Length: 278
Image (cartoon, rainbow, N blue to C red; front, side):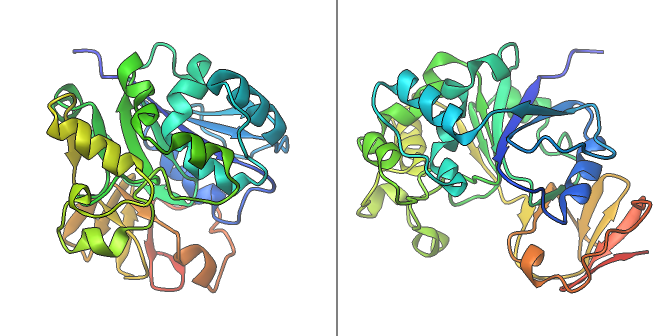
């Protein structure tokens, strides 16, 4: 059997792990051929942590100091959420983590995965350098980057990266500098006046110039649609559409019953406001 293209996914988390964290871990365990790295200052023991979830301890100050040294100027990472702007630079900032992998990725932990490899197929991976989870912009919730010097330094092609990295404001640099609604209409980001050249802008421009191949597909569920079934490592929406992951960005705050199902079941369902065993 041919060797699978290797994938390392990176996220940073500071402070106490959130209530939904066990569901994230559970879904990772059903994706054993992907390695998930969590950079954190939380040294508490993690129950039921699968082997493919790997914890790396770094303080925010350590990341800030290392990033400033590598980039050659003082960066501003004074609060954890600011790290979102640095996501496209993780390959450059954490070479020791991604060494030996074919692809590295950015992700979050407010996610429940279905089957990653059913979407990140060898055909998709072999024919693209960057793979986004939405059709209209680069997704900070999950995006893959080919592990080579050109892609790892791609963020440097934004004329604004120094402004973004040295300023305390969150610019949504990893995605599209808050141009979500404009991009949903189908207009190209290259045709919109960009206050900040985000990663979507950079990638679309490089792709237009023939310097890379990017893959944009709508393979996630967000919001509060309900009717999402997790079944032994696969996610089915409306009993019809298979998706790669459910981003809990709204669900995590609106969920009424946050008591974790024990043991974590092989099949459960997301309603609009709860997680229920089937």
